[in-house]
Image (cartoon, rainbow, N blue to C red; front, top):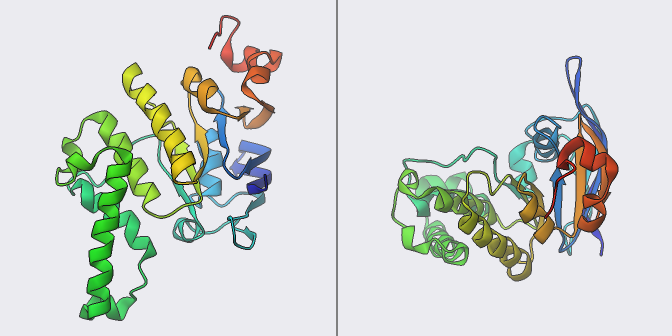
Length: 262
């Protein structure tokens, strides 16, 4: 399968600290790929460089959206990255807590609106029709993610697991071809984590969205991932299928530990 994301020699310096050191990561269309490693290894910084939060010191981020031309997006601002078809969630939930569940998803969906400033100001018929469609499509996303019953609830009133799902729903509402999940199982109980397994597979299989995730729950990683990259002190120290990673001496020493079993 063709690579939809191809990251070459990505490097990120903060003053004298090198947070990411010449990382090469490739994700093929339809894959679920994990990036793992100890806290502070540089994983979230890597995500931030891909999605425009940081401009990398060196390296290249290239995307190859299915059915479209390849494009280099290194240094693009976050809104441009979203326009190109990448979406992400965050390690710490970032919802609009005092807005409804539906409104949170509509914000994501609005990135695909065609109405310009004129339409927004003067509310012409085409704009009204488009906004009605946004409401319908946003509700459809909530149903797919399994939280349609919360449509009119304030985001802050949702159970924790549902808030995690809402953040995923808002990301999917932007119509991405690649979804980056930053510790989606953080804070979840075992039952919620198992349900998240099913949701991630559903997103990949039904919505045809490729997934790159950061996660500390190694049981989830080993169950879902086709391939795994391992980062330590900003460097990639291993990559390969789960069975290979489980037995890699460098990974065991740096992260998994001798007693790891998943």
